[in-house]
Image (cartoon, rainbow, N blue to C red; front, side):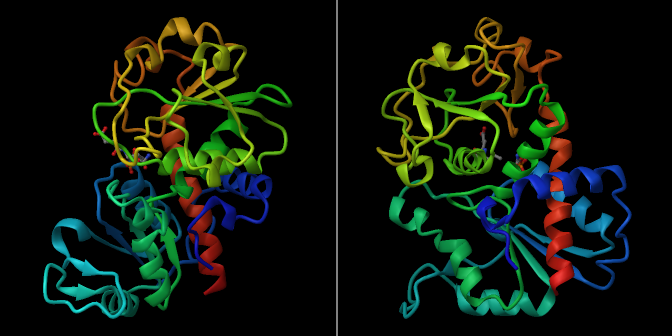
Amino acid sequence: MNYISIKDIDSLSKWVKSAIKIKKNPLKNKKLGKNKTLIMLFFNSSLRTRLSTQKAAINLGMNVMVMNFGSEGWTLEFEDGAVMNSGASEHIKEAAEVVSQYGDIIAIRAFAGLVDKEKDYAETVISGFLKHATVPIVNMESAVRHPLQSLADAITMEEYKTKHKPKVVLSWAPHPRALPQAVANSFVEMMQMQKDMDFVITHPEGYELSPEITKDSKIEYDQNKAFENADFVYVKNWSNFNDYGKVTNSDPNWTVTAEKMALTNNGKFMHCLPVRRNVIVSDEVIDSENSIVIEQANNRTYSAQLVLQKILKKL
Ligand SMILES: CCC[C@H](NC(=O)CCC(=O)O)C(=O)O
Ligand SMILES: NC(=O)OP(=O)(O)O
Protein backbone atom coordinates (compact mmCIF):
# COMPACT_ATOMS: atom_id res chain seq x y z
CA MET A 1 0.00 0.00 0.00
CA ASN A 2 1.33 3.47 -0.97
CA TYR A 3 -0.09 6.89 0.00
CA ILE A 4 0.43 9.17 -3.00
CA SER A 5 -2.95 10.88 -3.32
CA ILE A 6 -5.97 11.53 -1.07
CA LYS A 7 -7.78 9.32 -3.59
CA ASP A 8 -5.82 6.34 -2.19
CA ILE A 9 -8.30 6.57 0.70
CA ASP A 10 -11.29 4.22 0.29
CA SER A 11 -13.58 6.07 2.74
CA LEU A 12 -12.62 9.62 3.78
CA SER A 13 -15.22 9.74 6.54
CA LYS A 14 -13.96 6.46 8.05
CA TRP A 15 -10.31 7.63 7.83
CA VAL A 16 -11.18 10.95 9.49
CA LYS A 17 -12.99 9.17 12.33
CA SER A 18 -10.02 6.77 12.76
CA ALA A 19 -7.57 9.67 12.90
CA ILE A 20 -9.64 11.45 15.56
CA LYS A 21 -9.67 8.19 17.56
CA ILE A 22 -5.84 7.97 17.26
CA LYS A 23 -5.62 11.60 18.45
CA LYS A 24 -7.43 10.61 21.66
CA ASN A 25 -4.91 7.81 22.41
CA PRO A 26 -1.81 8.36 20.20
CA LEU A 27 0.37 5.73 21.92
CA LYS A 28 -2.17 2.90 21.70
CA ASN A 29 -0.25 1.23 18.85
CA LYS A 30 3.21 1.96 20.21
CA LYS A 31 4.37 -1.59 19.45
CA LEU A 32 3.08 -1.80 15.88
CA GLY A 33 6.19 -0.22 14.37
CA LYS A 34 8.77 -1.97 16.57
CA ASN A 35 11.92 -2.77 14.55
CA LYS A 36 10.45 -1.10 11.47
CA THR A 37 12.21 1.89 9.90
CA LEU A 38 10.72 4.97 8.21
CA ILE A 39 13.09 6.76 5.84
CA MET A 40 12.15 10.36 5.06
CA LEU A 41 13.77 11.99 2.01
CA PHE A 42 13.45 15.77 1.63
CA PHE A 43 14.28 17.41 -1.69
CA ASN A 44 12.78 20.64 -0.28
CA SER A 45 12.38 22.48 3.03
CA SER A 46 9.88 21.50 5.72
CA LEU A 47 8.83 22.19 9.28
CA ARG A 48 5.43 20.62 9.85
CA THR A 49 5.73 17.62 7.54
CA ARG A 50 9.17 16.66 8.82
CA LEU A 51 8.34 16.95 12.53
CA SER A 52 4.75 15.64 12.44
CA THR A 53 5.61 12.61 10.30
CA GLN A 54 8.59 11.80 12.53
CA LYS A 55 6.36 12.23 15.62
CA ALA A 56 3.78 9.91 14.06
CA ALA A 57 6.42 7.26 13.43
CA ILE A 58 7.72 7.60 17.01
CA ASN A 59 4.16 7.22 18.34
CA LEU A 60 4.06 3.87 16.49
CA GLY A 61 7.43 2.74 17.88
CA MET A 62 9.24 3.05 14.53
CA ASN A 63 12.87 3.91 13.93
CA VAL A 64 13.24 7.03 11.76
CA MET A 65 16.00 8.14 9.40
CA VAL A 66 15.78 11.58 7.75
CA MET A 67 17.87 12.83 4.81
CA ASN A 68 17.93 16.23 3.16
CA PHE A 69 18.26 14.60 -0.23
CA GLY A 70 18.16 17.94 -2.04
CA SER A 71 21.35 19.17 -0.39
CA GLU A 72 23.04 15.96 0.74
CA GLY A 73 22.14 13.31 -1.83
CA TRP A 74 23.38 12.77 -5.39
CA THR A 75 21.67 14.51 -8.29
CA LEU A 76 19.35 11.87 -9.76
CA GLU A 77 18.54 10.88 -13.35
CA PHE A 78 14.90 9.90 -13.83
CA GLU A 79 14.90 9.04 -17.56
CA ASP A 80 15.25 5.34 -18.30
CA GLY A 81 17.95 4.67 -20.90
CA ALA A 82 19.63 8.06 -20.37
CA VAL A 83 23.34 8.35 -21.20
CA MET A 84 24.51 9.81 -17.91
CA ASN A 85 27.40 11.94 -19.12
CA SER A 86 26.23 15.29 -17.74
CA GLY A 87 24.70 16.52 -14.44
CA ALA A 88 23.13 13.49 -12.75
CA SER A 89 25.42 11.21 -10.70
CA GLU A 90 22.96 8.40 -9.97
CA HIS A 91 19.91 6.87 -11.61
CA ILE A 92 16.65 6.70 -9.66
CA LYS A 93 16.69 2.93 -10.23
CA GLU A 94 19.75 2.40 -8.02
CA ALA A 95 18.81 5.13 -5.55
CA ALA A 96 15.30 3.79 -4.95
CA GLU A 97 16.39 0.15 -4.76
CA VAL A 98 19.25 0.97 -2.37
CA VAL A 99 17.11 3.11 -0.03
CA SER A 100 14.62 0.24 0.01
CA GLN A 101 17.35 -1.96 1.58
CA TYR A 102 17.57 0.37 4.58
CA GLY A 103 13.94 1.02 5.39
CA ASP A 104 10.43 -0.48 5.52
CA ILE A 105 8.59 2.68 4.36
CA ILE A 106 10.00 5.58 2.32
CA ALA A 107 8.42 9.03 2.59
CA ILE A 108 9.36 11.63 -0.02
CA ARG A 109 9.05 15.37 -0.41
CA ALA A 110 9.91 16.67 -3.89
CA PHE A 111 8.16 19.89 -4.96
CA ALA A 112 7.24 20.83 -8.51
CA GLY A 113 10.11 22.40 -10.46
CA LEU A 114 7.57 24.85 -11.96
CA VAL A 115 9.50 24.94 -15.26
CA ASP A 116 8.30 21.90 -17.21
CA LYS A 117 4.55 21.35 -16.69
CA GLU A 118 4.60 17.98 -18.45
CA LYS A 119 7.46 16.71 -16.25
CA ASP A 120 5.86 18.01 -13.06
CA TYR A 121 2.36 16.71 -13.81
CA ALA A 122 3.81 13.33 -14.76
CA GLU A 123 4.92 13.21 -11.11
CA THR A 124 8.38 12.26 -12.41
CA VAL A 125 10.18 12.13 -9.06
CA ILE A 126 7.71 10.25 -6.91
CA SER A 127 6.77 8.02 -9.85
CA GLY A 128 10.44 7.09 -10.17
CA PHE A 129 10.50 5.97 -6.56
CA LEU A 130 7.18 4.15 -6.98
CA LYS A 131 8.58 2.31 -10.01
CA HIS A 132 11.90 1.23 -8.51
CA ALA A 133 11.49 1.11 -4.73
CA THR A 134 10.63 -2.28 -3.22
CA VAL A 135 8.88 -0.86 -0.13
CA PRO A 136 5.75 1.36 0.29
CA ILE A 137 6.00 5.06 -0.62
CA VAL A 138 4.34 7.99 1.23
CA ASN A 139 3.94 11.39 -0.45
CA MET A 140 5.09 14.28 1.78
CA GLU A 141 4.31 16.75 -1.03
CA SER A 142 5.07 15.91 -4.61
CA ALA A 143 4.85 18.09 -7.71
CA VAL A 144 1.08 17.72 -7.92
CA ARG A 145 -0.28 16.65 -4.53
CA HIS A 146 0.10 16.97 -0.72
CA PRO A 147 -2.22 14.23 0.64
CA LEU A 148 -0.95 14.24 4.24
CA GLN A 149 -1.95 17.91 4.36
CA SER A 150 -5.41 17.43 2.89
CA LEU A 151 -6.19 14.51 5.21
CA ALA A 152 -5.26 16.76 8.16
CA ASP A 153 -7.48 19.46 6.66
CA ALA A 154 -10.40 17.03 6.54
CA ILE A 155 -9.79 16.01 10.16
CA THR A 156 -9.74 19.67 11.22
CA MET A 157 -12.98 20.59 9.44
CA GLU A 158 -14.69 17.57 11.01
CA GLU A 159 -13.60 18.77 14.45
CA TYR A 160 -14.72 22.38 13.88
CA LYS A 161 -17.83 22.10 11.71
CA THR A 162 -20.95 23.42 13.43
CA LYS A 163 -23.59 22.50 10.85
CA HIS A 164 -24.57 19.60 8.57
CA LYS A 165 -23.47 21.09 5.26
CA PRO A 166 -20.84 23.80 5.85
CA LYS A 167 -19.77 26.14 3.04
CA VAL A 168 -16.03 25.76 2.34
CA VAL A 169 -14.05 28.22 0.21
CA LEU A 170 -10.59 27.62 -1.26
CA SER A 171 -9.24 31.10 -1.91
CA TRP A 172 -6.11 32.08 -3.81
CA ALA A 173 -4.03 34.88 -2.26
CA PRO A 174 -0.96 36.75 -3.59
CA HIS A 175 2.63 35.68 -2.87
CA PRO A 176 6.00 37.14 -3.93
CA ARG A 177 7.34 33.76 -5.14
CA ALA A 178 6.10 31.11 -7.57
CA LEU A 179 4.63 28.33 -5.42
CA PRO A 180 3.40 24.84 -6.41
CA GLN A 181 -0.27 24.00 -7.01
CA ALA A 182 0.09 20.80 -4.92
CA VAL A 183 -1.61 21.92 -1.70
CA ALA A 184 -4.54 23.48 -3.57
CA ASN A 185 -4.81 20.41 -5.84
CA SER A 186 -5.04 18.01 -2.90
CA PHE A 187 -7.51 20.23 -1.05
CA VAL A 188 -9.76 20.25 -4.13
CA GLU A 189 -9.51 16.46 -4.51
CA MET A 190 -10.31 16.02 -0.81
CA MET A 191 -13.31 18.35 -1.01
CA GLN A 192 -14.60 16.39 -4.01
CA MET A 193 -14.66 13.33 -1.69
CA GLN A 194 -16.73 15.16 0.95
CA LYS A 195 -20.42 14.22 0.86
CA ASP A 196 -21.98 17.05 2.86
CA MET A 197 -20.01 20.20 2.14
CA ASP A 198 -20.76 23.12 -0.18
CA PHE A 199 -17.43 23.83 -1.92
CA VAL A 200 -16.31 26.79 -4.03
CA ILE A 201 -12.90 27.81 -5.40
CA THR A 202 -12.09 31.50 -5.82
CA HIS A 203 -9.11 32.99 -7.67
CA PRO A 204 -8.38 35.66 -10.29
CA GLU A 205 -9.31 34.84 -13.89
CA GLY A 206 -6.37 33.05 -15.53
CA TYR A 207 -5.35 31.31 -12.29
CA GLU A 208 -7.42 28.21 -12.88
CA LEU A 209 -5.93 25.02 -11.48
CA SER A 210 -5.60 21.99 -13.75
CA PRO A 211 -9.07 21.11 -15.08
CA GLU A 212 -8.13 17.46 -14.50
CA ILE A 213 -8.08 18.35 -10.80
CA THR A 214 -10.99 20.82 -10.51
CA LYS A 215 -13.33 18.85 -12.81
CA ASP A 216 -16.83 20.26 -12.09
CA SER A 217 -16.01 22.03 -8.82
CA LYS A 218 -17.60 25.48 -8.65
CA ILE A 219 -15.31 28.45 -9.46
CA GLU A 220 -16.19 32.02 -8.43
CA TYR A 221 -13.94 34.83 -9.70
CA ASP A 222 -15.45 37.33 -7.23
CA GLN A 223 -13.69 36.62 -3.92
CA ASN A 224 -16.17 38.62 -1.84
CA LYS A 225 -19.06 36.67 -3.33
CA ALA A 226 -17.26 33.39 -2.58
CA PHE A 227 -16.69 34.45 1.05
CA GLU A 228 -20.37 35.23 1.60
CA ASN A 229 -21.72 33.04 4.42
CA ALA A 230 -18.68 30.73 4.32
CA ASP A 231 -18.03 28.48 7.33
CA PHE A 232 -14.42 27.65 6.41
CA VAL A 233 -12.00 29.82 4.44
CA TYR A 234 -8.98 27.80 3.27
CA VAL A 235 -6.38 30.15 1.79
CA LYS A 236 -3.38 29.16 -0.35
CA ASN A 237 -1.25 30.80 -3.00
CA TRP A 238 -0.34 28.93 -6.16
CA SER A 239 1.58 29.99 -9.25
CA ASN A 240 -0.15 30.19 -12.60
CA PHE A 241 -0.95 26.73 -14.04
CA ASN A 242 -1.87 27.98 -17.53
CA ASP A 243 1.20 30.24 -17.83
CA TYR A 244 3.09 27.53 -15.99
CA GLY A 245 5.03 28.41 -12.89
CA LYS A 246 4.67 32.16 -13.39
CA VAL A 247 3.56 34.85 -10.94
CA THR A 248 1.21 36.83 -13.16
CA ASN A 249 -0.90 38.37 -10.40
CA SER A 250 0.20 39.94 -7.09
CA ASP A 251 -2.97 41.91 -6.44
CA PRO A 252 -3.05 42.79 -2.70
CA ASN A 253 -6.84 43.06 -2.92
CA TRP A 254 -6.83 39.23 -2.67
CA THR A 255 -5.10 39.34 0.73
CA VAL A 256 -7.50 37.94 3.34
CA THR A 257 -8.48 40.74 5.73
CA ALA A 258 -10.94 41.13 8.61
CA GLU A 259 -13.28 42.96 6.21
CA LYS A 260 -13.38 39.90 3.96
CA MET A 261 -13.81 37.51 6.89
CA ALA A 262 -16.76 39.67 8.03
CA LEU A 263 -18.58 38.48 4.88
CA THR A 264 -18.46 34.90 6.19
CA ASN A 265 -20.69 33.05 8.65
CA ASN A 266 -18.21 33.61 11.49
CA GLY A 267 -15.95 31.49 9.29
CA LYS A 268 -12.82 29.65 10.42
CA PHE A 269 -9.56 30.65 8.76
CA MET A 270 -7.36 27.77 7.57
CA HIS A 271 -3.89 27.67 6.00
CA CYS A 272 -1.41 24.79 5.67
CA LEU A 273 1.51 27.04 6.76
CA PRO A 274 4.14 28.42 6.32
CA VAL A 275 2.26 31.64 5.64
CA ARG A 276 3.44 35.12 4.54
CA ARG A 277 1.72 37.35 7.11
CA ASN A 278 0.16 40.56 5.70
CA VAL A 279 0.53 39.22 2.17
CA ILE A 280 -1.61 36.07 2.23
CA VAL A 281 -3.54 37.08 5.35
CA SER A 282 -3.55 40.05 7.75
CA ASP A 283 -2.12 39.67 11.28
CA GLU A 284 -5.61 40.54 12.56
CA VAL A 285 -7.17 37.51 10.88
CA ILE A 286 -4.50 34.88 11.53
CA ASP A 287 -4.25 36.02 15.18
CA SER A 288 -8.02 35.97 15.65
CA GLU A 289 -10.01 33.31 17.50
CA ASN A 290 -11.42 32.23 14.13
CA SER A 291 -7.97 31.10 12.97
CA ILE A 292 -7.49 27.33 13.43
CA VAL A 293 -4.10 27.04 11.69
CA ILE A 294 -2.29 25.70 14.79
CA GLU A 295 -4.81 22.90 15.40
CA GLN A 296 -4.68 22.22 11.66
CA ALA A 297 -0.89 21.82 11.97
CA ASN A 298 -1.32 19.65 15.09
CA ASN A 299 -3.55 17.32 13.09
CA ARG A 300 -0.69 16.64 10.67
CA THR A 301 0.67 14.14 13.26
CA TYR A 302 -2.59 12.15 13.27
CA SER A 303 -2.94 12.29 9.50
CA ALA A 304 0.56 10.80 9.14
CA GLN A 305 0.06 8.33 12.00
CA LEU A 306 -3.08 6.87 10.42
CA VAL A 307 -1.31 6.47 7.06
CA LEU A 308 1.76 4.83 8.61
CA GLN A 309 -0.43 2.60 10.79
CA LYS A 310 -2.39 1.33 7.79
CA ILE A 311 0.82 0.64 5.86
CA LEU A 312 2.48 -1.12 8.82
CA LYS A 313 -0.52 -3.41 9.21
CA LYS A 314 -0.07 -4.56 5.59
CA LEU A 315 3.70 -5.16 5.76
C1 LIG B 1 3.12 23.20 2.61
C2 LIG B 1 3.42 24.30 1.64
C3 LIG B 1 4.78 24.12 0.99
C4 LIG B 1 5.04 25.12 -0.10
N1 LIG B 1 5.17 26.45 0.49
C5 LIG B 1 6.21 27.22 0.18
O1 LIG B 1 7.09 26.84 -0.58
C6 LIG B 1 6.24 28.60 0.84
C7 LIG B 1 7.60 29.22 0.68
C8 LIG B 1 7.63 30.70 1.00
O2 LIG B 1 6.62 31.27 1.44
O3 LIG B 1 8.69 31.28 0.78
C9 LIG B 1 3.91 25.14 -1.14
O4 LIG B 1 3.30 26.20 -1.33
O5 LIG B 1 3.67 24.06 -1.73
N1 LIG C 1 2.08 22.38 5.68
C1 LIG C 1 3.28 21.82 5.50
O1 LIG C 1 3.46 20.80 4.81
O2 LIG C 1 4.31 22.49 6.16
P1 LIG C 1 5.88 22.24 5.87
O3 LIG C 1 6.13 22.64 4.45
O4 LIG C 1 6.55 23.12 6.91
O5 LIG C 1 6.16 20.77 6.09
